[in-house]
Each structure stands twice: as structure tokens, then as C-alpha cells.
Length: 506
Ligand code: AMP
Ligand code: ZN
Image 1 (cartoon, protein in one colour):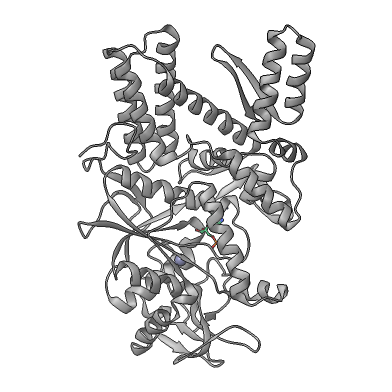
Image 2 (image 1 turned 120 degrees about the vertical axis):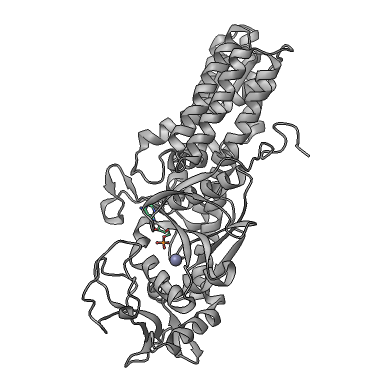
């Protein structure tokens, strides 16, 4: 049964529009579908939890989130798996420097990653696989490769993948590795981008390092084997789609394919989805250049989580996104317009009836929105289609010609929009408050005016606003102005409108 428009955010579901995406493997735009006829089975490489996630990481996770939400919007059932890399060279190094066991060290950053994901409205995958809880599966996969002499143990006790045994090596990244040097090896997690080398499957533990005692010897898994083993454990030998940032194409994803297909002789993932890297103010983000931002850094500067989500999503995933503070301000204003519009249409009293011309404009907006998302996830055009509807409906409302049928159609379309973009609900002040509480615990600096703003509760603000309204009524304009200024100093902006005074935090 269909729910009433606006009550079930996914009430418009339809199975007829295909979502088409660029597939790195085939080099073509192709439909995404559930090859088992039930679920779209997708795997996304998750975070390496050695630090807080930065906005580049979240650009990738947000587009994967948009992808799963669009699939759901189109009526697909999704089985999405993500790993968490909670053991690797950097983690071992950083945990050692912090004097902590690796599980204590990684738990803090794993928790922070999911807090940040929640703040950004990233839906949780159906399964989350921790590397350290899946060591047996990785060992079993290496043993399978060893049985075919594709995995070999080198002096020092580490195991490697013999890439000369996988002639298709390079098929994803389209690199030509002719004349691969058999036996040339690499075992660090920070790879040479162009070289083809036998890569580590299992790294022998060195004194003082974390390791597992296994039939392969004492050691820890290489990063690539982690994703092969976990993807196949949760999704089967062959599945529909594999996602990650563009840097993972080579060698990580190339190596995942080599390991998995050598073991199973089946195609691993059919469709490969890669998100282009984000730049900040035109440059590669880097700590030493001072243009490196985590979500928490931005929240503590007073930017809203919803605006960050909207900005990171507004540029389609295959285009370069240049993140700027002007862009963030634009995104904040766009969200304000959308929220004000949504409230206006929802709460207004609209006369019964319908206006065919406006009904058609809304319907066309809906088609353009859906078509844009289905055309290689074109979030920019999808967003533009919604703003076209916003302008047309606002014009009708201003003229007093908006009627009940179109108000309802608009709310249904906004719910459809929000099932992917997820920015209408205002949780921003609450999320900023949580970031501030974290900053205080961690003794980190936050923007002073932000601290002042959030030190006032909604009740305190309501009282000050009421006092100002009373002063105005009593024609005590000096007092009214002083109260407005006091509120402004504390970061509260007042808006006088026909329906009374509204306030918002800056
Ligand atoms: P990591 O935690 O470094 O393994 O990265 C997690 C995800 O973020 C991977 O899919 C990376 O490809 C992606 N990623 C890292 N940096 C950026 C960036 N600047 N822009 C977009 N995605 C990124
Ligand atoms: Zn991976």
C-alpha cells in the first residue's frame, strides 16, 4: 500500500527507471542492477582509522551514500558492505607513538568516523566489517592462492602475490604492465603509483609489533587482501558494484581483482565506481599547506553540517570539486532557502483546487530530478531541477495562486529530493553543540562567537525575543534595538516577518 505523500519518504518508489553509472572497468556508462534479482550488492572501501576523517574522505562516502539512496529511491533493495581498516602500518606506528594498544587507539577513531558520518547524514551500510575480526577469512584466501603457487612466502616470513600469474593485471586502471619483473616486491602500504610489483598479502611481525599466530606464520594481513576476503564473505564471489576514491583504483582495487579472481576464477565486482578527489581552494589538501580540514574543524569554525553535506554532494562525483569557504556560504544560503520554502508550503493554508500549468511544471521538475540522478548521478542537475520548482511555486504563492494540489505535489517532490540529499531536517545547532562538547573534552580551540551562540539555550533566546517584542509594542525602540543588538552579539539573528519574529543562530 502506498503511504500518503510526505509521510513515507520513499512512497514514490518505482522499478522502471534504470540508474546508469560510469564503470571504470568497462570505460562505459552502464546500468546498475541486482544481478541476483534481489539486492544490489555493493562494497565500499572504508576508512583507515588512524586519525579523524577529512572532508576528502567524506566526499567519497557521501557520494556512495547518494548512490545507495538513489537505488532505494528507485525501488531497489541494497546490500551495502563497508570495511574498517583497523590494522595497518600507519596504525601500528601511530598507536606505538601514542603508547596505546592498537585496539584502544583505533576504537577512538572508528567511533569518531561513525559520529561524523551520522552528522553528515551518511546512512549506515547493511554490514560493517572490521579487519581485525576477519583474519581467518584472509588467511584462508591466502592459503587458496598458495595452493596454486600464486601466493609465495619470501625470506623474512612475509607472503606475496605473484602478479606474473595474473595476465589481466592492469585491466581496471588500464595500465600496461608488459614485461612485469617476476619477483620484484613491495610491502609497504604507501605504494609507488606506477610500478607493478608483487605485493604483500601477509606481513611477518617484527619484534614489538601486533600480529596473529596463524598457519601462515605470525603476522598481519596486507591491506588489499582485507577487502577481497571481506567483500566475498558478505557478498559472494561475484557481486554488483565496488566503490572507493579514485586513488584506490591502482594499486588497491587492481590488487583486489587479482587476488579474488585468481582464487575463484569468477569476475569479482561487475561495476567499479570511483569518486574524484576533492581540492581545497584549488590545491591538493595537505596538512603542511594549512588547507586540511576534518568535519570537526569546520563545525568548530561555525559551518553547519548540513551545508557541508550539501556542498560535498552538489558537484557530481566524476567532476573535480574545489572546496572553498565561499562555496560553503553559498551552500548554507541554499539550504536556508530550501528549508524556508519547505516550511512555507507545508504550513501555509492553500485553497482547494489545482492549477494545470503549475502541476505540469512540478511534474517536469520531478522528471528532470530523477533523470539527472539516473544519468551517472548528476547531483548538480538534480539540485537545479528542485530549485526551478522552488522558484515557480514561490512565485505562485507570492501571487496568491498556489492551490492545495500543487502544494501537496511540491511536498512529495521535496520528500523525494530529501531522501537523497537529506538536508531539510535542521539538526545543525545540535551537531555543532556536540562538536563543541568534544572540543572542550579534547582541549581544542573553537570560534569564540560560536561558543557564545551556543551558550544560550532556545528558551533564553525566546525570552529575549519576547522582551524585545514587548519593548517595541510599548514603543520603547531604544530598548528594542539594544535587545536586538545583544542577541546579535551572541550570534542570534532576528527576522521580522508578517507572521511574527523568527530567530536563527548565525
Ligand atoms: P582512507 O581512510 O585514507 O583509506 O580513505 C577513505 C576513502 O576516502 C577512500 O575511498 C579514499 O579514496 C577517499 N579519499 C581520500 N582522500 C580523498 C580526497 N581528497 N577526495 C576524495 N576522496 C578521498
Ligand atoms: Zn578496499
